[in-house]
Image (cartoon, rainbow, N blue to C red; front, top):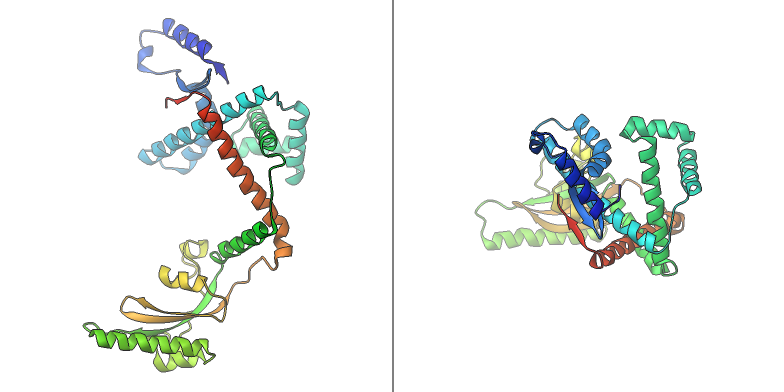
Length: 338
């Protein structure tokens, strides 16, 4: 509900005048934000937050943890409502509206993508998130309005060059690489405790020489069997088996072992067959070889072009939205009271 500030204040005064003697113990209504001459009420915020609060109550144990999660929801959602109010006021000034037909078309498209009827879509939304049909319609209307205003703002200004596409593709490949299993091998040269500077340098020089020999084409496994001090992998040619990148589901659940972060970072920077190092890792110098990596789903730039373009456009729209909101905030009185 978008309430003119003077009406919101009048309503609160009236509510206080007719309150019972015990009403002062409970805050039933108040203004939680002011945007221009419009007020956002606590009841509005609570209504919007209801589906999220139900999810928190179902997933987070009662107590301090649940209270903290609920407080974060209120803060994040209020900021979203402030942004939406700014967008709505800008839309009014630009005479931009959302028609009932546009909302119905959006629901038909969503339902078709989910392979269900619109009625089934509403039932699913109610069951999964607690959204009523009207709440769902209001959310879609807000999304359509925001899309229209962004298109109006950036229309004709979006310029995506071939270099942009190539850079985005390279970034996608790097991001995906950090989620793919990989198969490394290593050579470990221990440095004995209390070693002199000369002894440490001698081990480093040997590690550097072995790395160069491996890069030059010598059999890495044979070098590991001859020189590595890691007894667990030496006879296997330094083979460490398949590993999962840090933070992936396989790593978190223990389905795959992980490497030390600094060693993994070096492996992420090379292609299968490449050699990294030597690197100092604790009491040793380490040379790594990447034997293989789980294949990428991105085979070629041309195959990935539709997804790359979609991501680039989304990034541009996100940046345009933030700049637009920042401009609106500079020109509008915004006060958050939560």
